[in-house]
Length: 104
Image 1 (cartoon, rainbow, N blue to C red):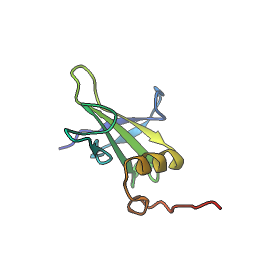
Image 2 (cartoon, one colour):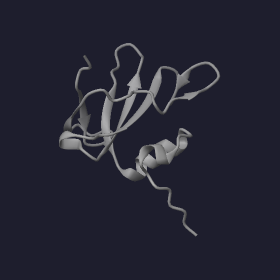
Image 3 (cartoon, helix red, strand yellow):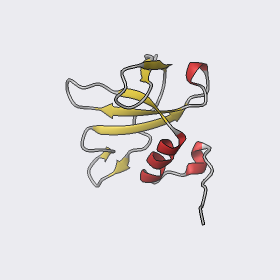
Image 4 (tube, helix red, strand yellow):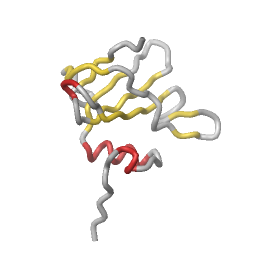
């Protein structure tokens, strides 16, 4: 069974906002020709929109780390930051329930 992961209030913030289970740590990874990664070898990026509990409706990013001595960590991100992460990974905003806004 998946272990609950602490979710911090923001990247670099030590305040725990809640806990979540089953968040993907690599659903925004890209193939670089050798590895699936996002941010370097052994680095992964996941994103989830939480459906229940204290964090319901919020986007949570997970930085997955395969390097010895370092651990995955999750943090709350704004819709704007989640949108930026999704677009940078080449994923579809509609899949994430975000409407693209085109400014003129």
